[in-house]
Amino acid sequence: MEGDILSFLLKSVYDVLPSPTNLKTWGLSESPDCKLCGRPANLEHVLRSCRTDLSDGGYRWRNDKVLSSIAEHLDQDRRAQKTVSKDPSLMSVVKAGQQVKRAKSVSGILGTASD
Image (cartoon, rainbow, N blue to C red; front, side):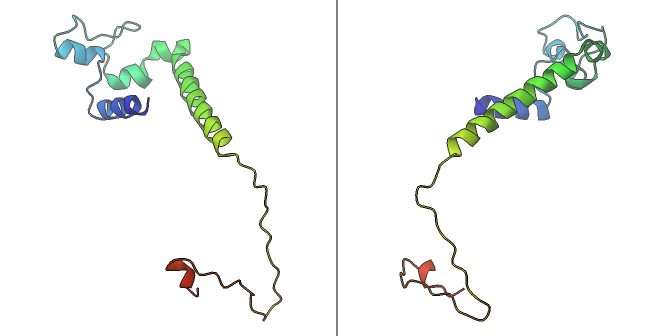
């Protein structure tokens, strides 16, 4: 699915999606006009500026679909990352001016750092 999204994004940036205008240019269609309003249908027109589609709720429908898809993916990620630690790590409280007492376990090059 992610490859399809990337492909769509790249094609939209370079305006090579099969919009009616591009289909006419490529010789694959008879008319470059929008089927809803009759104006020339380039990518911008199809995705966000067809007045007929806007008044019929098409823009809101697409927007809601995109938001629904994003919410679904976020929810899946949230559920997958939900792990409960059985062994809570406790924070030690140190009074001002005192040093933190640390166990001397050195592991790797970062374990020897003093900062």
